[in-house]
Image (cartoon, rainbow, N blue to C red; front, side):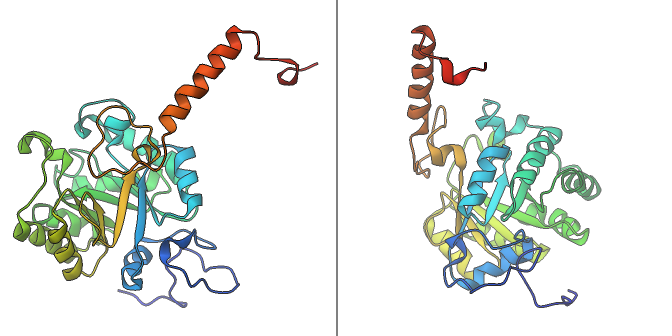
Length: 293
């Protein structure tokens, strides 16, 4: 790896002058620049907990970034959350790029990672590089995420060799839902560790651990050098990720056990729309202050 020309920084631009912060990485947005993939990876050594949200549009991604998360993931879960489909398999690469482009424009501080949808990285290494390259060229996003460990090590290595940062995804792989027969907790600790080690050796800068026992996640986190981001994987991971719709309480339908809703905006939305309907029907909206002379 080449040496930086200046003092190392986890951000794409040096921070502005001022007193240094003594808080953990998640204490707020950086003073300047966007967090890079190497900078994100380096935060593991700080001992603070990393935070990520999955977001799909400009407004929610921007507000999450302003709140101070270290990472924003444009997830293929948009197939379910945004499009209302039964799994993640339906979303296309073009649709991922469409959403990633708006999220990339919204975020000014956090690292932005984009899921590679099925089967964009299953068609050989050259096709994976081509598809990941399209994502980075057409958006302001900085890295891709793909599901896999041992089985995708060659692809991860090819992408990183091409200069494309990769976040791996081990444990439950939603793109394998038909092969798995559903969404299930993965308990084979040795296979999980092998996947994590293979992803790290191939050059991944971080990894998501989904729906695995807390003890397995703790072991993996202690044995790998790169950050682990948990979702349904216990508190020992280096960080946590939640879908912002779940976090805000605006998810329709089933909500997984690992979700914690920090608001009930669905109720607020229902009440606000009903208030609007009532005002219109009763002649209370619009009134003079909402019109023009």
